[in-house]
Amino acid sequence: MTIEITREFDLDSELILDSDAAAALFLEARTANSWADEQISDETLQAVYTLTKMGPTAMNIQPLRIAWIRSSEARAQLVEHMNEGNKAKTLAAPMVAVLSYTNEWHNLLERTTPHMASMAPTFEKNLDSRNTMAVTNAHLQAGYFILAARAAGLAAGPMTGFDASGVDAHFNANTSCSAFMVVNLGKPSGVIDRQRLPRLDFDSATVTL
Image (cartoon, rainbow, N blue to C red; front, side, top):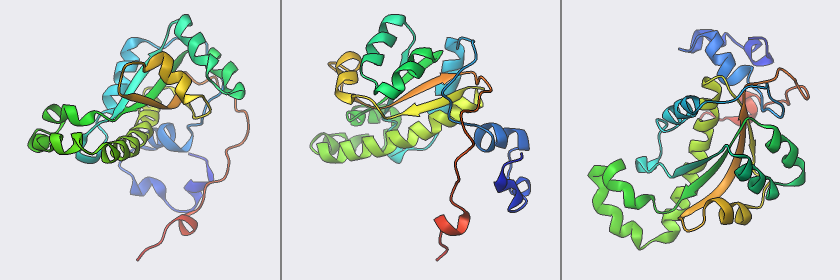
């Protein structure tokens, strides 16, 4: 591990991950805009979701829903709604995932949180609360998703530059789902577009009370 953070203190001694795993998940992984010429199997996608779903969410509500964009027809429909700067890289990525949240997660409480299933009628009456919990926890799961992709040897390019209403019309019609992020996925090409941008140090971003 060669990036600057490893020189601040002995990071390896504080982690249960070995140095290669820490590098793959955090220290050396980069947001990707270009890709190796290698397709992604359904088994790899299943592995990514298997890790993603294990991250904690409030009340275990798991509001994240994923649409894997594999066909050329679906890809063309998606690209129509991407911002101009995101179109070419979305076309080029071996796989694209549309991340959405559902505000009807309460209907699955019997499966996800059996001991709190009796709260479903209360949430049914409170759409604002359901929306807030859905948005917050789906974004939390999006972070797990990116790390899961890296754990599977993929690079991720998350984007929010798209017409969400257009994406929903194509991919979430007649559902309770709302798109909030599009993530390009593929094996990394090794091309580095620019140097890693600075991260805030410990003293700048944290306080001990």
